[in-house]
Amino acid sequence: MLTGITGQDGSYLAEQLLKRDYIVHGLVRRTSSTQRVRLAPLFHDSEVYDKRLFLHYADLDDTTTIRRILLKTEPDELYHLAGQSHVGASFEIPETTCQFTGMGTLKLLEIVRDLAKKPRFLHISSSEIFGRPDDVPQNEETAMRPVTPYGVAKSFATNMVRLYRDSFGLFACNAICYNHESERRGESFVTRKITKAVASISLGLQDKLKLGSLDGLRDWGYAPEYTEAMWRMLQQPEPDDYVLATGVANSIRDFLAAAFGAVDLDWQNYVEQDPRYMRPSEVTQLVGDAAKAKAKLGWTATTTLQELARRMVQSDREQLSQANPTRF
Image 1 (cartoon, rainbow, N blue to C red):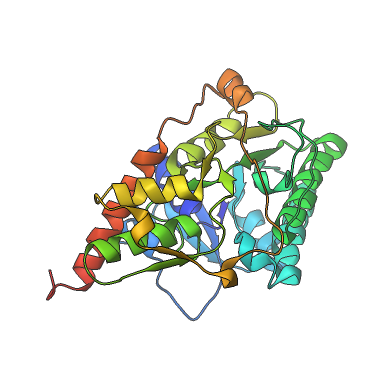
Image 2: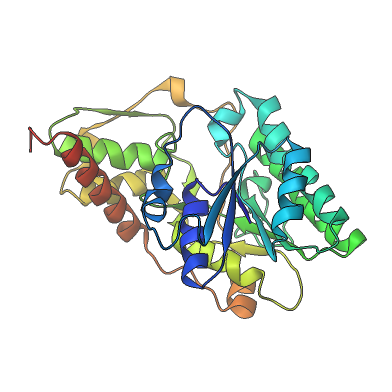
């Protein structure tokens, strides 16, 4: 069972589980839109959809429906990926962020606690729990010092997972994920905003790109590698928490250079800073130490920033070309 199956991580994880011959169930919000672009290839596979992939409708705060679905499906593994995950937006909608990202996780844990057949549980945590850490890089023992509403909500959820593991014996794990991007990243995230703009500029559809701070350092990896690690966590003999990261710090400027470099352009000729995109509080020096994941899971992030940016730009160029067939 996957919550957030229609998101970036959910779609990759669903594909990976299906390749391992899992039967996959996904929780999706009931909305007016039935378009779920990231899952489209699976929907159109007659050997998969409604045979090994099933969707169930429920919001994260609809505990009665979620309980009913879990009782019916009896999953062996439960991957909790859903929630309000946009850090910048969390300053605008802090109550919603805490309700779905924090309390949504607690409600799921309470349901799992009561099930006769308790699935192995994975919660997707975030490097945002560390905020402004004293130590660089951070590992599983680093103190939580969140500086964003999203980070605060994730800290609550992460600690609740640990509490339920220790107090109630649940097989419950935290995947403390640093930034991980892909061609399926939402367009409101800065990396996708950059690569889509680069694609548009390179095709003559756009002139400038406006961004906020260019100084923040991030540890950027490739999403499909991170969902592979999530699966490995639930195959271990004992539950535990793991940092998933590349261990390499890059700035927004570095990502801009890599993205514009993929189309042989100099980013400084096209990027303007806009105060409207500055966050009230910004994290710094978030770089992860994934030594534990390497030692226990045999996992290492391998995709470089340059390759990540190239893939994203190439995908966005293809999408724009298809959307404007008369121009290209």
